[in-house]
Amino acid sequence: MRKSLLSAVGLLLAASLPIATAQAASLLEPPDISSNIAAPTLFNLDAGSNLLTANSGGPGSGATNGTDAEFITVVVPTGLVLDAVDVVSRSGPSFGSFLGYNVGATLSGQTSGDLAGFVIFNAFSGDLLTAALLGVDALAAGTYAFWIQETAGAVDYTLDFVVTPEPSTAALLTLGGLGLGWLRRSTRRT
Image 1: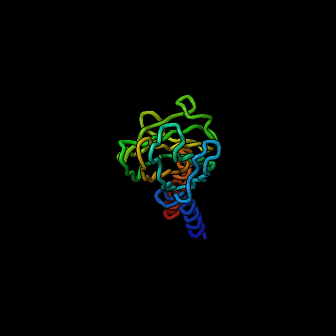
Image 2: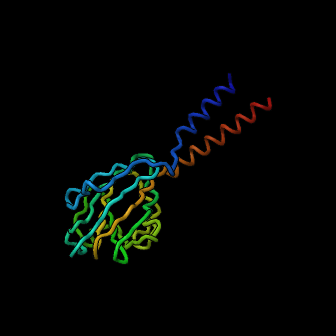
Image 3: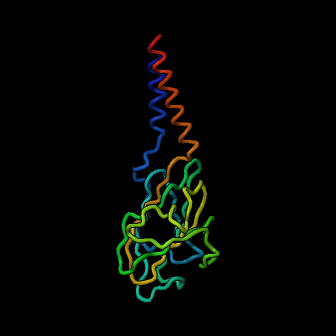
């Protein structure tokens, strides 16, 4: 009885752990992602890999003229963190694309003073959250507005918004698992 109870608790704990590499959600263009700074496209994130695949820019695109810029609002659920924004792919004629963010559902403007951080990225940039100008390890549960813009020609890209448990939640689950393992071993000895 005790062994089956411990096994059941262990299975419940294992089932509650999110798999960070699992595909959680995706936002795919078309349909067109919002180019309106005041009405971004909503992207509810889940634990795991959340892919945004789109294209930005076009003839005559500029940094702030709104020509096929993408504005999205991401929602990080309670108990989770946005751990990374990884560049999966990017192709186009220019050296780099722009990504900026701020806390809240929308951006108040399109200047550096309106942003918590920004970065120019290319296919080899890796995690954009830890990039020099964004400089954060993770974003806590909450709502964030992102702006993606290309300044020279059309670019196709895929970004992975990686969501994981809060460090305190993950630590508690790990400690709980270790405790169950210890309890299980100690009950076998008696």
